[in-house]
Image 1 (cartoon, helix red, strand yellow):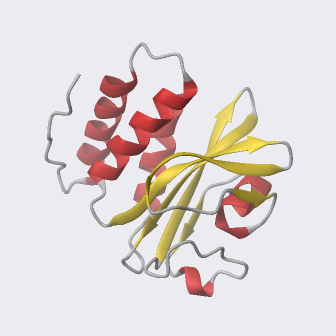
Image 2: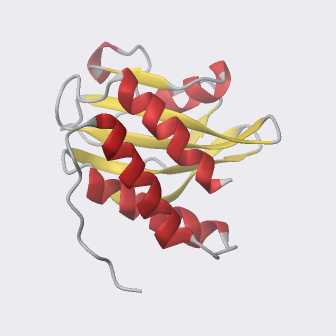
Length: 157
């Protein structure tokens, strides 16, 4: 199936409803986790033109290992509790960071990044990975984005 360009509305409720539809469309029927996450990262990146990195880190023992993503090369492994991704895993909750330079222990992959959001991926009460998104704009991600993305990643379980 080829990608069909869509225009995302500015209203957050409508935006996330369309994002969920797009994720469903491009992951439906696929059972391979890598394929699902690859298409999901692409769909999400298309929806967020001001995001300079969109991807997944997957739990592997006591580390998160980079999975499918859109953007520049990234850190391959992140320890439990390290950086924004490891903090989301350790605290078992999403992280919205308005300015990464103010986040103690931030792991810089791209010096152009200002804001970041990390959403844990849950299955059977356990975190199996995280969605990580960076933006070149300070304060780009909001609580509405956190809520919308939390609902969207439920489709990936």
